[in-house]
Image 1 (tube, helix red, strand yellow):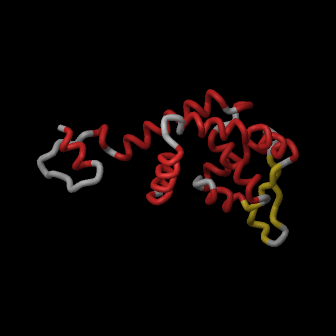
Image 2 (cartoon, helix red, strand yellow):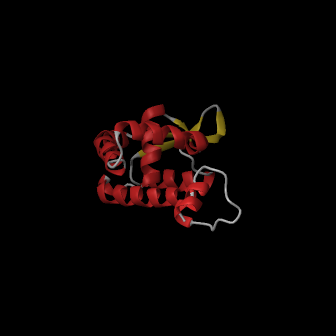
Image 3 (cartoon, one colour):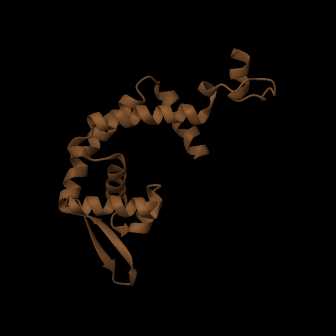
Length: 152
């Protein structure tokens, strides 16, 4: 059984080996994501969701940008980023305006309340990452991050 798992996690797959769900990268990534999401939900302040935080953090990093570009930078499709932006506008954390150079483009900007929120929430987000990666050494964290970035 250990040989089958070894074969499925990086070596040549043995055609006679059974499929072991616990050895599959998709299953492991989903479990890790579920754990991280639970930590995020428990620790993040003011009921901000992971997608809302991603949009706010990216706006804090980049400054104002089009809704479409914000979606691309946060790995959200057009419908998802629209819903996220609409909810953040409703909370007073971002503002939107038509781009003066292209009336088809909506520009999203952090509102003063959004800047204040990201300043308060960034240390919490760092703590969430620390808890998620708590079982790993510094070297393992760097390796995991590098490898996941390579396959995304």
